[in-house]
Length: 214
Image (cartoon, rainbow, N blue to C red; front, side, top):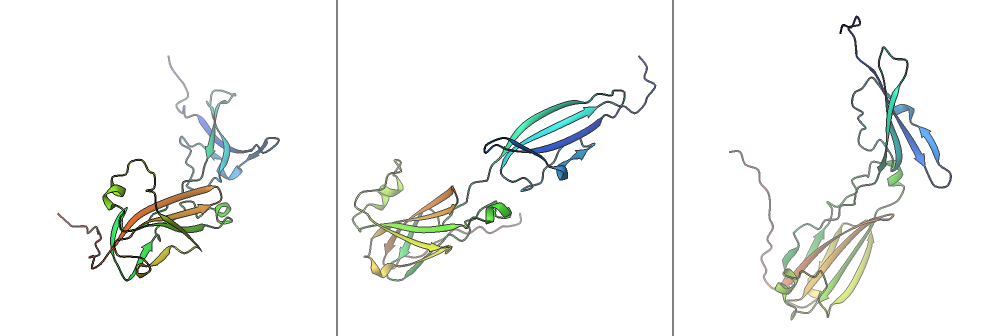
């Protein structure tokens, strides 16, 4: 078999259509995302707002007058919020001073999206205090995820404050507390937990990563 035409490269055409399905479906072609003659469709991060989209690929041979097409439906969802308290899950802190709980690395990975920033981030700190008789080892080996009985619950709502100052002198030496940090934006929430024990003359310890060249 012999072909007289040397260029067999097909024509390729990508298109993206937004689908609004609140009541009656509304289809909106996103002209800015049309990509002709590209074998791979690449959508940059945060280009598409959360929602449903129809992505279509149309291909036509130069010998044909007809287009072959295929489509898929994709759904863009927002990533989970990241809540994190520095210092690890279990800490022993000096009794009698001020301990700082730091959750400043918590964030919303989608913070660059304009539609997301319309809804403010909400921060809530809370802690459950336990008297010195509570076993620290019991909390460390607790696999049921249930809080030990006998705690006193306190909630502090600080708006957007990612630091919590805890005056340990208001408690007793040997007391423990389960610190809870919750990050919320609209229907999305994320929580982080940390257990602390207040001990006289405790030596503060932390793990730090130091890169080395081998």
